[in-house]
Amino acid sequence: MRARAVALATLASVSIVGIGWQLGSSAIEASQSLTASSGGTATAAAASAAQAAAQSGTFTGAVVPTQYGNMQVSVTIANGAITEVTPLQLTNRGGRSAGISNQAAPILRSEVLTAQSAKVHNVSGATYTSEGYLRSLQSALDTAGF
Amino acid sequence: MAIVGGDYERMPARTCATMGTVVSLRLGGSAADVDSAAVEVVESVFRRWDEQFSLYREDSELSRIARGDIRLTEASQSLRSCYALALDWRERTRGVFTPHRADGVIDLSGVVKALAIAEAGTVLTARSPANWSINAGGDVLVGGNAGHPEWVVAIVDPGNRSEVIANVPLGYPLRAVATSGSAERGEHIWTPRDGEPSPFRQVSVFAADIVTADVLATAIVAGGESTLSEMTERFAIDVLAVLRDGQLLATPGLRRTA
Image (cartoon, rainbow over all chains, first blue to last red; front, side, top):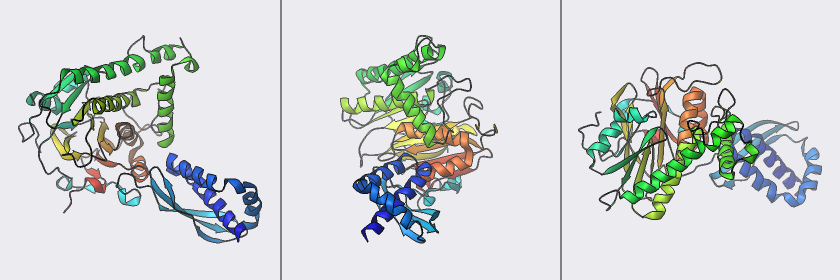
C-alpha cells in the first residue's frame, strides 16, 4: 500500500514535470514542492516505479498550492506509458479565472466593459514617441488637467 | 466614443520626457497637485535606467557590451539580473519575446521601460500613501489598494486615434496595462516564425504588474492568435485585441456585464 502511494506520488511528479514546459514557471514550482514532499523516499520511489509501470488507468494528483494558486492534474497510464495529462485546476491568481474560460473571443464594441464613471485619467495606445505624444489623447488629457 | 471634450475628471498631471517618450504622472486622492519632488524622483528613476540600458547612448553599460568593450560576465549585477529576467520571459513566451536583436546584440528595451515604471511606482508608494498613476508612452501603472476608487484608462482606437474603444477601470489586482501594435511606429513588430505581418493592429494587456503587461502585449502582437490563446490560459491577464479589419477580441473580464 505504501509502495503504491509512493508510486502515485512519483507519477504525479512526472505528470506535472510533463506539463511544466506548457505551464511555465508556476508548474516548475509545483513539481519542486511535490518532489520535496517525497524527498526521503526517492530510492523507494525509483524502485517501485518499474513495478507500477504495468498499471493502467487514470490517476488524479494532489492539489498543489503554488504562489499563483492551486494546481492539479490527472494522468492516464496505459501499459506503463503516460498517454494523457489533463490539467484539472490551473492557477487562478488575483481572482481572475485562468484556463479555457479566459479565452479572448470576438466582441462588439458596444459590449466592451466601460467604467461606470466616464472620467478618464490615462490613455493607452501603441507606444508613442516624444513627438507622437503631442498628437496623442494623453497629451490632451494632461493639458486639460491643469 | 470621443474622449476630448468629454466628461473626464480634472486632475493635474506633470510630464517629463525620457526614454524617447513622455511620462505623465498623476496623484489622486486629496493631493491637489503633483508635487515637484515626486516628479523629480520619478524622473531620476527613468534617467538611471536609461543611462544604463539605452542603446542610443554610446556610454551606457549595455552599449559597451554591444561593442564588446566589456563582457557580459564583467557586467554589473543589475544588468545581468535584467538580462536574466528578459530570458525568463523568452522562455515563458516560447521565444516569441526575445532580448536579442537580429544581429545578436542584447537589447533590453522590451523590459527596461516597464522595470523603470515599476520602480517609480514603488518609490511613489513609499513616499506617500496618496494614490498615483504613471503613464509612460501608453504603458500605465496605478497605485492604490483594493477598494480605492478606480483609475480609468482609455484604450485608443488604432483605426482612428482620436477615438477610444473602451474606458476600462484599472485597479487591484490588475493595476497595469500596456498596449502594443503597429499603429504608431509602423510595422515595428513582426511574427518571428514566418515573417508574416501580425494579425493584430493593436493588443492591450491588463495584468497585475507592468512588466507582465508590457512583455505579453509585445509577444501577442508578434505571436498572433496562438500566442494570444496560450497567454490568456497561462497568465492572469485580460486582453483587448484589435484585428486588422477592426474587429475586437476580448477576454471575459473586459466584457460589459449585462
